Image 1 (cartoon, helix red, strand yellow):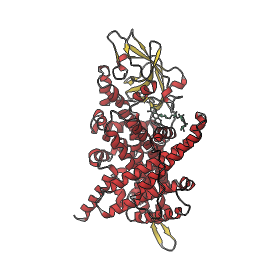
Image 2 (cartoon, protein in one colour; image 1 turned 45 degrees about the horizontal axis):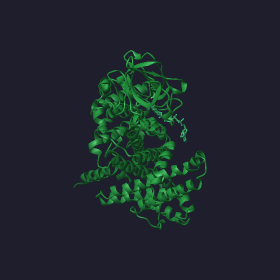
Image 3 (cartoon, rainbow, N blue to C red; image 1 turned 90 degrees about the vertical axis):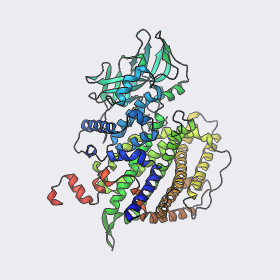
Image 4 (cartoon, rainbow, N blue to C red; image 1 turned 180 degrees about the horizontal axis):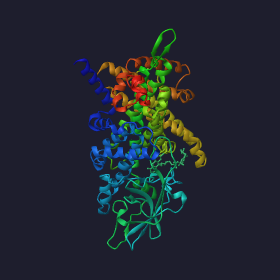
Length: 607
Ligand SMILES: Cc1cc2nc3c(=O)[nH]c(=O)nc-3n(C[C@H](O)[C@H](O)[C@H](O)COP(=O)(O)OP(=O)(O)OC[C@H]3O[C@@H](n4cnc5c(N)ncnc54)[C@H](O)[C@@H]3O)c2cc1C
C-alpha cells in the first residue's frame, strides 16, 4: 500500500467508526449532491427569497434520490437525509423532514391501503405538493395532546368539517406562510362524531393549490426569525370540508356503506401516541441533524485552528491550535460530538430491528438521545463559533447558521427539558434494586474503563433519585416533580454518556490501524473524563470520589489533549466532509484569499 492508499484506508476505518459502517450505502451520494452549485451560499436574500430557495433545494434533492416512500421504507436512509442537506441550508432540514417523515410518514404508517388517500399520497410522493404537518397550536405546544382543532363528521355528506374554535387553537409554526407553493397538510384534530370526542386523529387537508390558499383557510406567516427564512405560520380553519376518506383512521376503523363511522374505543393517550407515530423516528432525525452539524462545526473550527497563525511570546508565529485554551475546548467538543454520534448509532440499530412496534422503553431512550444529542450539539457549536473569532459569525462559514438550527432542534419534536424529564420518569423503574458498586480508583484509567465508570455513576444517580422520590412520598405531585426534575435531566445526560462510551469502545475494536485506534482511545478517555468532571459534585457528595481525585482527572485530561494534538486530523478526516463540500472560506487552505473573494474585493488584490 502506498501512502495515499494507506491514508484512504485509515480514513475508511474512521468513517466506519463514525457512521457505523453505513457511509457508502446511505450517506455518500447525499454528501456528493451538496457539491452542486444550487447549494452555494447566496448573499443578500430577503426572508421570502431564502425560504423559496430552501423549497427549490428540497425539490433538487427529491429529484435525485429514490422516492420518499422508498426512503421511508429504509429508516437509515431517512436519517441520512436528515443529516446532509442541513449542512448547506439549515432550513432544508425542516422542509425535508416535515415532508418526508412527519407528513408522508403519517400516510405511510396509517393510510397506504386507503383508496381515498391515494391521490394525496401520489402528490406528496412526487412532490407535486409539499406536506406541512400541523400538530402544535398557539396555546398547545408541549401540551399538544390537549389540542383543540376539531374535525366533525357529517354522515349525510360523508365529510369532516375542520374548525378552529378560538385564537389559542390556531395551528402554529407549521409551514403555511407561503401560499404560492402547492401543499397538502396532515392536520391533527379531535374527531367528533355523534356529539362525542373520539380523540386526536390525523387528517389529510389540501391547503393551497395553483390558485393559492383554499377557501376557509386563513393563514399568515409568523414574524421574521434569524437565519431560517421559512414560512412558519399561523393557520385558522373555518368550516373546511374534506371527504371522510381523508381521515387517517386507525386499524379496523372505517366509514361503512351506510355512511356511519366505525371507530374503536381507545384510551385517548394511546390514540394520540398512535396518531403521532412519526415523532419517534422524527426524534432520531432531529438528533442526526444536530450531530451532523456539530461534527461539521468541529471540522471547520479545527481546520481553521491549524491554519490561522498568531504570535507566541518569544517564539514567533504558530497556529492558534497550539494554545491549550484553544485546543482544550475543541478536543472536548470533538470527543462529545463523536461520543453522542456513537450513542445515536446504537439507538438507531435498536429502532430499525422492528419499526412497526417500538416498546415504551426504547421510545423513552430515543427521547433521551434526542435531548442529550441536541443539547450537546448546541454546546459544541457555540464553542466552535467562539473559537473561530469573527470568522465564526458569518453565515458563509456555516457555524453561525448551525447555532440557529440547534435552537429549533432543542424545541421542536418535544422540548428537551419536558421530554428528558418525562422519559427519565419512564426509565427510572428500570434500575436494579441492589446498591451499585463503588467507583474503582480513577488515578489512571484506560478507554476500556470508561463505560464501566460512567455506568456506575449513572446507576448511583438513579438510586439517589429514587431515594429522593421515596423520601418525599407524601408530597403533592407538583412538589414531588419539582424536587426531581433537575436531577432527572442530569441523570438523562449521564445515561446517554454511559451508553455512548460503551458504543465507542465497541466500535474502536473494529479499527485496525494501531495509530488511529490510539487516537480514538484518547478521544474515548477524554469523553469519559469530561463526564466524570461534569458529575464531580454528585460523586464527591455521595462519596464516590475524593476531592484529590479531581487532580488525577485533570492530569489525564491534559494527557488526552497531548495525544489528540497528533491524531485529531485523522479523526476529522473520517467525518465524510471536506472543504470542497462545505465551501466555508475559513476552512480553505488559504482562508485569507477565500474570505477576501467572498467579500467581493477586486481580484487583483489577491491574485
Ligand atoms: C423551528 C421550529 C419548527 C417547528 N415546526 C413545526 C411544525 O412543522 N409543525 C408543528 O406542529 N409544530 C412545529 N413546531 C412547534 C414545536 O413542536 C413546539 O414549539 C414545541 O412543541 C414546543 O411548544 P411551544 O413552542 O408552545 O413551547 P411551550 O410549550 O410554550 O414551552 C415554553 C417553555 O416552557 C417550558 N415548559 C412547557 N411545558 C412544560 C412542562 N410541562 N414542564 C416543564 N417545562 C415546561 C418548556 O421547557 C419551554 O422552555 C416547530 C417549532 C420550531 C421551533
